[in-house]
Length: 137
Ligand code: FES
Image (cartoon, rainbow, N blue to C red):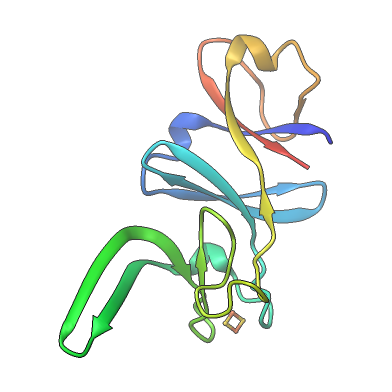
């Protein structure tokens, strides 16, 4: 599995997202409060752009009239037909055992580490002062 430098970390602030392309694959990187997650920008239903999806939370209910809201902005809703996916796992919120968006492992590396390799910088120069988002494919 190769690692690719895809962005300076500062370009994807908490709550933000960025669409990158790695080896011909469109991948959206999400930053959830400092944790980074990668997902193929292609909804498993009919290919909608998950990068353009609304971020929502989880609403659960144990009985009528009572509900609990949690995980604010950790779920992406596909803009085409509204299917929702857990950004952390890629699992569908409706059928988690059967339907899943393709995920990629994403990490943060210091600039000094990425200049040593085996990383591949795809679209920009790498300097040693910053941290970089690195994706494994
Ligand atoms: S293409 Fe995403 S819900 Fe239909």
